[in-house]
View 1: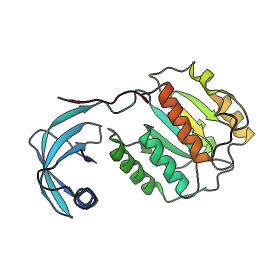
View 2: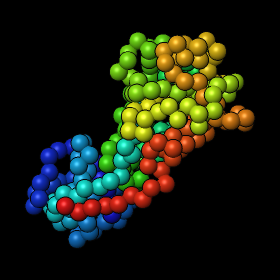
View 3: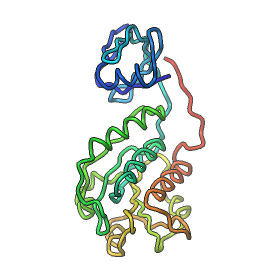
Length: 249
């Protein structure tokens, strides 16, 4: 069932109006028509089934049929601290880690970051919304403004639960580190830019409570490392491999 993320408070039998880009998405991309059912998700993660009453490229109206309870979010809250990447690499990381269930992505400007300033925040937020919609998620991950490396540790609220920093030059086996982690707590994963982290940055993260981990003997591209790390964490501590079920209230 097609899904849209909308801001508002919804209730059964309510008639809603969908305009602009979201109406064009329903009409042009999905080719929805009158009588088709869609799923509406609000900004709190609540989902509602709705039926389209009228639709055009500029506007659609739909009636809320009822609330649905969806078990689509992982019990593990993941914050990805991603060293900024050039061009479409950052787009790819945001898209794929959103599909994999990350809750928050913080672009971090490190010593080796080639991208040090950007006006792509709105683009990244849009990519996250599209990936959430495609993957059937209840929420859209928060995409923060880029932060300097040292600023991460000066703002504790940016770090969720225990942290792991991935370094191609050493560290513990990830499987050994994960034995010390709680499956229902938050976790922050720090992956580097092109060229990886400097030794000084790894030492700083370690002093601030981050475990230093290796993803194996092979050196992965920065975008591959982020996707691989999230996949492993979701399999070991989250819900990857489990069956998603939809329940109607």
